[in-house]
Image 1: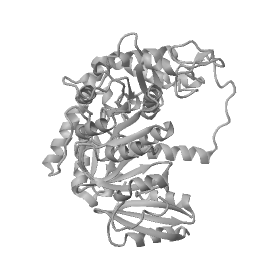
Image 2 (image 1 turned 180 degrees about the vertical axis):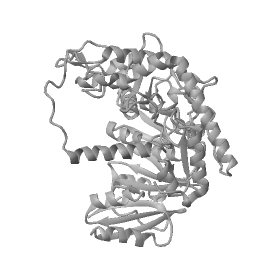
Image 3 (image 1 turned 60 degrees about the horizontal axis):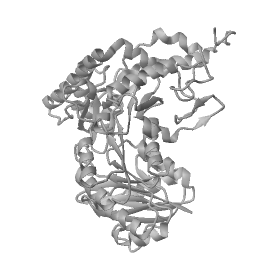
Image 4 (image 1 turned 135 degrees about the horizontal axis):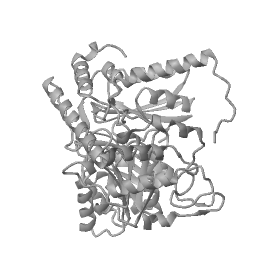
Length: 383
Length: 139
């Protein structure tokens, strides 16, 4: 079958030039793409013929759908792989491939709010900005908790907060890899607090957008997954695995998902996902990379990225710049450089800090060049 | 007239800079109320073209708060926000969100969002930023 039975009219010369300009711009920026947690090293050429079909994973990937041009089967395999990776209890998990971290967090917080409509969401100061937006959309009460200087949630502040609001079920939004500093909140510490305060009704969601694909592959991981009693978590697909289209996975305990299941007759499928029409291509991309890399491949890739991160810390130190990172993080924090350097290297900045994230495409040579530009400061050549 | 609040480092010439940017866009400032919270400035301005002013000032990298936000100052200490939220629970006033805007030098500037603005202001009157005998207009 061909989705395009008739050849489409060709682009005119002016439009072709615009696409060429776009390609040129992307090639140039990709050379110094070092400040965002996105892997630019992937090759999906083998899958391009699938783009000839109107793929759509509408509905629950675990339920039969009348829309047959879907990739539900591969999506289920992807979800099951992530479930094993995050120690989800066999037979008591559910999940799907999302459009990215924001949808995963929306889903997790939605579950929490459905379970505890009168609950209060607690999240740290270092949480991704999109969470405030999600909280507003969900119309759920929320209170920000202080962060430690290294980016982890301040458990002393959380203790005081939970104690003062012990009449309200807490919905805890925790991070495994904060946006700016790569910090992992102390999930065990949080659960200990809940136990000490005798709070039995609570919900735990973990945003493991980046570190969810790092921690399972290191020797001494920070605790973050279902073994620690979390109810839901999400991991991005376009971040560590890499994809030209943003994507991710959300996983939750089956018993809490069942609370929001609704039958939708129109598509003949259970509508448990946030979106209706869903991307049918990204599950194939993720499945493809999982098959090619496997656990051993990802473990080696994580090791390489962590080595590059430490190399960056050392190179900054040798250049007289104070840089640091968390033990299991590829996020290298350093003092905010001049704007010319920020623009040239696509760096993310926040107040007086910036970060480099050593994703798979970031090489030691790129690190050397970045450090040289940081040292050169305002003398850095323009983009 | 609608009001918005800009949060930034307190420095000389800040008000002039804001006024110039808005004037260049043809936006009229009809009211100004500047307050200090430690090293931070909270500048509330009333403008005739609210949405455009919000967009232009946000694009400059400033933190700009819409008019339904109340800004307060509390000690930067564990449980400080929780104690503020408790006041609302005890008084039966709906408080949607409580979050830090900035933490500096032992003080925290905090944004509160509530649909019950006038009752909320009564509850946090003692926490409104200093150098002002009244809350920022429109917050």
